[in-house]
Amino acid sequence: MERDAIKAAIIRIFDEKFEIVDPSADDNLRDAYEFDSIDAVELLHEIEILLDTQLSQAEKKNAMEIRTINQIVDYIEALAQDRCLAKSSGSEPCLSTMEQ
Amino acid sequence: MTSAGRGRLQPIFDFLITLVVWTYFTAGFVLLFSPFYLWAGIFSKNRERAFQQLNSRFYRGFFFLVRRLMPGHRWHIQPEVRRIRSSVIVCNHRSYLDSILLISLYEKHNTIVKSRLFDIPFFGRMLQWSGYIPSSAEGRFAEMMIQRLERMDAFLADGGNLIVFPEGTRSPNGSLGRFNKGAFKIARRCRAPIEVLFIRNTDRMFRRGVFSFNTRGPNTIRLERIGGIDAAAECATGSLSRVAATVRAMLELKNDGEEEA
Image (cartoon, rainbow over all chains, first blue to last red; front, top):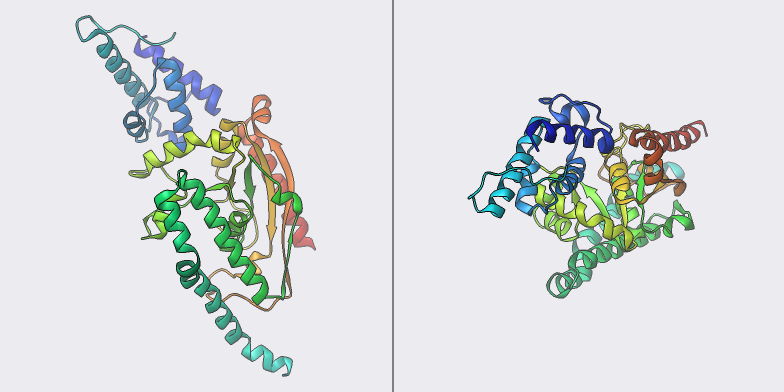
């Protein structure tokens, strides 16, 4: 899944789960949309479904500092990359491991 | 004694009774409850559950004392309020007494607490060990918040109640303040019903900015259930904002009726 596809998936989740329609990529979600830590916990659950993986407590904790859609996309890309590397042991290029 | 004489002495009575009540909170806690907390802290398999139960009983003792020492205040708590289980309870907020009154009614409870209170020595640790949820997820509270919210589904399914004051702070004048949507989000996430309670006149007993209790009365403190909402079903057909607006309308209707009366 490319960055654009991740972004599209996140935009869809925001619409369906948080009633936030088409948020700007760099808006501070808390200030602009009252996206709070309770929402963040729900978003983490959605990310687990998206990546078909369990996030560690440390990974979840790091996510609580995220404020924008772009940062969420960066976070998911990094998670996907980590999991891909863990599976392939770095011997192959990492492609998508996400559910599409 | 004449009523004028009683009036002059009333602040002294108020002060003395307040001291007795606060003595229960301090010495009473140490002498009567701390051994049980210590036992629960060391040996209990479910420390949070045990601490919640002890908190509830400690506050029940507080209200037992308050009723005896301040007979001018009458208490009307609807029986159906006490029967609520597995729900997110939302209530208007008039006084510091509101939260401890609700905690005293439910042995299996949780609540959202201002994060700064977790920093108070000893008391903050008690809040943490009781499994209460910090109001923000900044810094060290992030992990605590995540863990507690993730366990909330099971807690509610197992008969626990989550007590939330959506205004987040006490009303300065009786009118309803702006709502935080946290309670509604949790109810939707956990597919738990929302029970709407209305509390009145606790602020007449323990007034904002005044050290002493108003011990005299006459006053009637009422706690009643004014409605319930199936948050999951409502959110499936409408929006979270609509659920919040519905709860607000219920509380405002009751609040306006009270002011007119």
